[in-house]
Amino acid sequence: MKDYLRYGIIGIGKMGHNHAIRINYGLDKNARLLAVCDIDKARRDWAEKNLPKVKCYSDYKELLSSKDIDAVIIATPHYSHPVIAKEALLAGKHVLCEKPAGVYTKAVRELYDTAKDCSNRVFGIMYNQRSNPLYSKAKKIIESGEMGEIKRISWIITNWYRPQAYYDQGGWRGTWEGEGGGVLINQCPHQLDLFQWLAGMPIKVMGYVKTSVKRNINVENDVTFYTEYENGASGVFVTSTHDFPGTNRLEIDGDGGQIVIEQHALSEKMTYYKLKIKETEFNKNNKKFMPRIPYKKKTYKTSTLQNAFALGIIGQHMNIIRNFSKAVMKGEKLIAPGTDGINGLTLSNAVYLSSWLNKEIDLPFDEALFIEQLNKKIAEEKAKQ
Image (cartoon, rainbow, N blue to C red; front, side):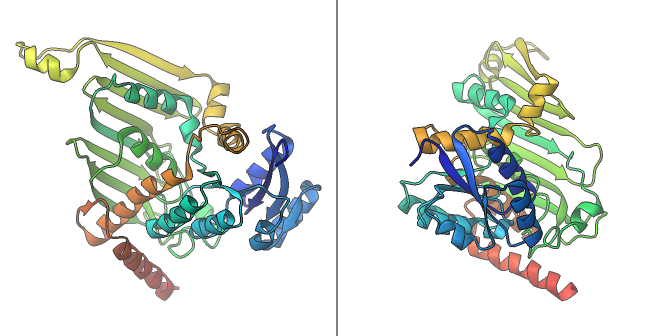
């Protein structure tokens, strides 16, 4: 291998287009963009004009057969992620896959079986928000034991506003057949990943999914779900794409304190309320009727420019790409291993299944039953068309 990683990008729509520009511009000193691929001729024409030294392919299999490519970034529609990633690993390429890892966990699990057999290849997923300094700080606090046992996690994220024009821009958007879902599979994979990255995986899920609220689409754009954990903790997640301006507020409560992360446009802060004595111990010794537990309050903020990096407007995706390049070239630990992709997808699959069947779902769930129910949604969609 050369002293830099030779990249190919499969799919140069919105995200792949951005990755191509940034790598080609040299924002990762350990990377070179040598090839792109897209089935859309207009996108290939753009690449030939704007990326003159980059080879263009219309068939990803041809790109994968090239000996000039060490690694690929997969930025195609969701259903194809595990299919192409699997073929790329078998072709000897390192793989960085856009989120989500797939539409249903069975396909992703099969991909992971392949990844195990290709252990000499680096496999990552584009969970760029793990590089956000505030979520990273929260992760460190929780892992340090300061928070004690987690009691509750709740996230309201309704600042995904998407008008009808957004869904009208592409035939695959807003459909079960093309996208595999709505806000859960498109906008929220990062938050679903962080939800379990910070609080762990639940053992039960109850979901309430509303389809086509004030939009002419076939998929969900309004969701509330509840989670239960082995230690008795609980969680609530609320999201939508039809509210404006919306809210983005994450709260994590533990025996030793509370973490609150709020985002307003480019203003983002984390407040950590660290109890001077853990609640369980305080409760055991307390004799007062309505006491207050003493705590220290710490606030972490980022400036407007720092937020631009943190929120991905400038650099968050590049953080993952740089980390991935170093993982291949220098053995650096991945921020987001590809095998972590199944966790957030498990949550979204379970939420869908719970809502469709109107019952609580135990994890792990019946993957075959989920596919059966998803196929019903696709059949209903086709019948309407």
